[in-house]
Length: 314
Image 1: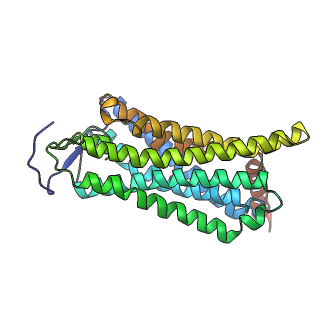
Image 2: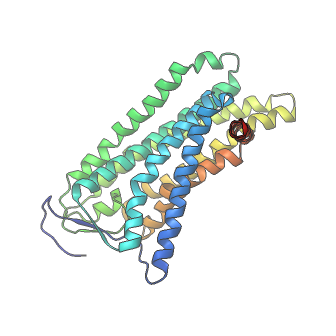
Image 3: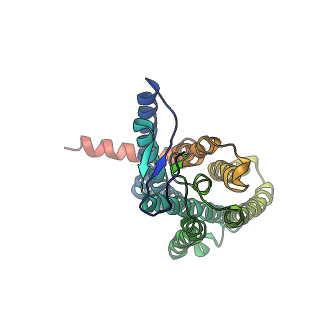
């Protein structure tokens, strides 16, 4: 990595993944296809929830909000991933780099809060069924969804602003997007204090939301086990299975990458781990919420039949 004078006119270089020969276009095309499928899948869920009246429930409202978030989340990092795959090391200005850092972590923390809200929704639906619609009115849904975005974008100001104040003596970012640990490795000063603040902020937010989710699912489990029939228990668990899968994918990758000192991860592993939560999870979420959900599959069938009927209508 080359030494450069500390100035905000400097250009960072995103290293990306090292691909050569025939692997470069193959990696680019494969990534592009998955990216387009991710966009299509999440857009499909948003449109489906709006198009089918039986999906106009709080649970599917929050799923559509999650899909909307995933559209932006994946689009924050994948374009730079595609550029590095196609062109190798790619220049990026410090301003764009820090904006990408802030937006990426804002969306990540928003998703963390949103997963907690979705667990609360399932808890109220299963444990407080008689009061569910009163407690989870449309106004409450909109307020909760808005609060997750405000909280996520507010919390991300701390790590982003601290990173922005660092003096940088190196310019090659060992990643395909601007993230905390790769940027801190470029600093001219000791970043131990910054890393501790990042761990505390991100760790507390993730831990609090995870404890909330586990507590709510503990209540759900107790309520479900009291149901009289196995069929009722299976139906109740089926409404939670998709959410549990997404929670495991999200929090497992978040804790591995961010709740620990940057030096605990060998340089280069950050990029591989990042593919899980920046690329794989947004791609899998639409699959999880469609194939693992009978109501969504039935909604797809109803909407498809309606479209066919409209086409055949003279």
